[in-house]
Every structure is written in C-alpha cells, then in structure tokens.
Figure (cartoon, each protein chain N blue to C red):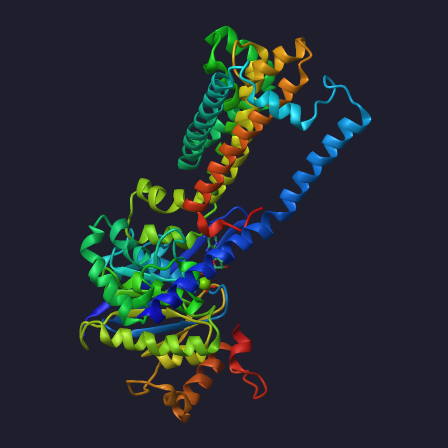
Length: 272
Length: 270
Ligand SMILES: Nc1ncnc2c1ncn2[C@@H]1O[C@H](COP(=O)(O)OP(=O)(O)O)[C@@H](O)[C@H]1O
Ligand SMILES: [Mg+2]
C-alpha cells in the first residue's frame, strides 16, 4: 500500500510540476518582455533626465496608483460598473438581436440594414446626445460602450447560428422537433465559439465606451481622473489611471476567455 | 412477411436558383420488414435524396411513399439516421449525445439512460460514456452515432455512407459490428429494416439481402440484385467465389457492361 501511495504522490507531483513548467515556458517570453520594457523605461527616464510631466518613471506611476490622496476605490468602482454594464447590455442585446435575425428570415431582413446603419454612426459623436437624454451618471457611459460593442455580437451570433451542418439539423427534423428546441439544443451551443469570440472584442469595446463617456462628462471614474490630471499636468496620475483601466479591461477579457474555455472547450486552439 | 417501405413512381426535382435538378425518377421499390437493403450508384445519383424522401425529411415531387402502411408527408418518427460523418454534438458527452433523440422527441431522457448505456456497451463504448466526442477515434464516433440512431428503437434505420470516411480495417470491423447489432437487437422477426447507402460494392454485397443499383442522374433503379449468401456472414464470406460473382455483376451493371479486368470496381464508381 505504502508503495502505491508513494507512486501516486510522485505522479501527482509530477503532473503539478509539469503544468507549472508549461505555464512558465508559455508565459516566459511575455514576462521577460514586460520586465525588459519596464527596465528600459526606468533607465531612459533617469539617464536622459526626462521630466516627470512628459514621461513619469514606472516607480512614480506605481506611487500614483497607490496614492491615498486619490479615492481610487471609488473611481475603479464607477468605471468598473460602467464597463461591466456596457459589456452585459452589448452581450445580451447582441445575442438576442442575432438570434432574432437567425430565427426568421423576415426579421433578419427588416433588422439588418437598421443595425448596420446604427453601427456606422460614429459612437463618440453620439455621446453628448446620450448625456442630454439620460443625464450625468454611469448609465449613458454604459450605453456608449454597449453601442460600440454590440454589433460584432449580433453578426457572430447570426452567423454562428446558421453555420451548421444540414445533417445536424436532420437530427431534429427526424423527430419533428420544435424550432425552439433545435435552437436551444443544437444551434445555440453550436454557435458558442462564434459568440464567445465576438464577446472578446466586445470586452475591449466596453472599456473604450465607458472611458469615452467619462471623457465627455463625468464627476468620477478613471476617465475623469485622466481628464483632471491633464489640467494639473499630473502625468503620473494619468498613467496610474491608465494602468488601472487596463487592469479592469484585462480582468473582463480574462473572464470571457475563461467562460469560453468552460462553454466551448472544443473550439480552444482553433482560433487565435 | 409484411412490407415496411413501398416507394411507387417516386420522383424528386430540386428547384434551385440556376434551374431545376431532377434527382430521382420513377423509383419503385418494396422493402420487407427486417430486410437489409444496400443502395449503390454513382455520386449525385440521388441516394441521399432517396433516404431523405423515405424519412419524410423532404417532400417528393411525384409518386408516393408509404412506410408501415402510412403515407409519408412529413417526418415519420420511426427512423434512425446515420450519416457519413458522425455529427456528434461536441459540447455533449457521448452518453448525452446518444440521449439526444429522446430530448428532441419530447421524451424524458432519464428513462432512456439505461438503454443508452446498454447500447454503448453493445458496441464496446461502455467505458467512454463520459468522454467528449473529440476524444474518440472516427470509428468509435460512428459507433456512438449508431447508438444514437438506435436509442428510440426505430423499426427503420437509414444509413448514408456511414463508414465511408473510415479506413479499410475499421470499416470491415464496423460491417461485422453492424450485422451483429442488427441481428442482436430484437429477434429474427423484430429485426430492423435497414437502407444502407455505400460507395463500396463489396460492402454492399457483404451486408445486404438485396442490392439496389442506381443509374446516374436522374436517379433510377437500374437493377436489384438478390444476394443469396448465407447468414451469419463473416470475413470468410468475402473469400467465396459467389461473393466475387455478385460484386462483379453489380460492377458490370454500374459500368454498363464495360468491365475490364485491369480496373478495380471501387475506382470506377468512387
Ligand atoms: N438540397 C438540394 N438542393 C438542390 N439540389 C440538390 C439538393 N440535394 C441534392 N441535390 C442534387 O440532387 C442530386 C442528387 O443528390 P444526392 O441525393 O445527394 O446524391 P447522392 O447521395 O447519390 O450522391 C445531385 O445532383 C445534387 O446536386
Ligand atoms: Mg449522398
């Protein structure tokens, strides 16, 4: 028994070490690159004597990011809510519109030109209108993000739902399965990889939209921090806010990527 | 024994953007319950169309199709279908794939779990019920697809080049497996009726009671060959002179009697 346990422990350790090694190998170039950029940046700033309001050193950016003078928690919460809201509205709305389009040819033909038109609008230019309609606050920023991000979801949902083997549909036809059941059990799961890859784009768009909204008008949020830092030439603060924004963006992107690994593991490795 | 399929003067014309395609013309075929029918013919001669029309998946444009005494106008829920590719749903386990027909037909899949396991056991996939389709070889996937087709115990199995994508060895295995399953599900009488489309003449002869040979477009029945080889059949069956003779006869029909000794039958109709 002891021998068996021993072998088991060894195998377990072996597999743990193996995956750590794989992770290290996979991420090693990226980490090296990242550290390299930071080092060069720091060196450049100190040896060339670049002034802080032009290009702050990594150290002062980190200081700004953690400074207690700025209510970072509040700003992150405001912007994070706007990003998440924009993402959810775009995702749910896009999936619904895409499904509607694929559900009925008629609806598709009615809806598509309108959606294309909306998508060609310069969303940044619409931002002041949203402000006018919905007032200050997080909601208009969510809408701008959603407006930028929803279109790829509509298209990919519609395409994913119709990219299907005729034979797969025959499985449903054989049993006279109702249309909704064929959608729920075959077409929609079959479209997961398409939908999820659009959601990755949308995650980025939601960040852009939320920040644009805050640029146009706001009293809090990371976009607001950037705007105010500009007027006081506090560039480390602007950089700090940027890093926080990209952390939020990465977190959302990572969540979508994780969802994609859970929902559509068979599609992993096919894209990218 | 009673007739399960009666095709009378069946014709099928597809209307496409670039004109109409006559896929089937004047098909007359009667199939008895429990019979194993192979369908051979050149690509595009309407074999798949014939299966779909029989299952009620596509309405024929002329003639009549009667299955089990009932005229077919919409999908009859008495068929199991197996295609050239397994078309397993990648997001489902093998077991859940086999259970799909129950869900689609509005039945309670829980009640079919035991039967699904039994079927998977029968084709040697008992240990793979929890696996995902990508983890299985092509032959194993096709076995799972066969289980799916058999789940609701349909009296009629329609198989469209089910083993066409498999390598020769796996294919021979699958042939034996199919005959075993066919013989083992239900007794001699309750046997399923099978329409089996294939590109391989030897496969058609090996499996079938009768081989239906179709002519190029528009698909018509050129000849129906009664295969008198005794059952149960085994690999030795393939070595008998009778087997070779049936194969050659069908090859002759397909090529219009132009058979030359230096051509292999498979090449000519592939
Ligand atoms: N859905 C369809 N629409 C139009 N033409 C079709 C369709 N399905 C098949 N055909 C045509 O009908 C003919 C017979 O096709 P098919 O039944 O698939 O032949 P086979 O299975 O013998 O290769 C072919 O010429 C094919 O192009
Ligand atoms: Mg075909």
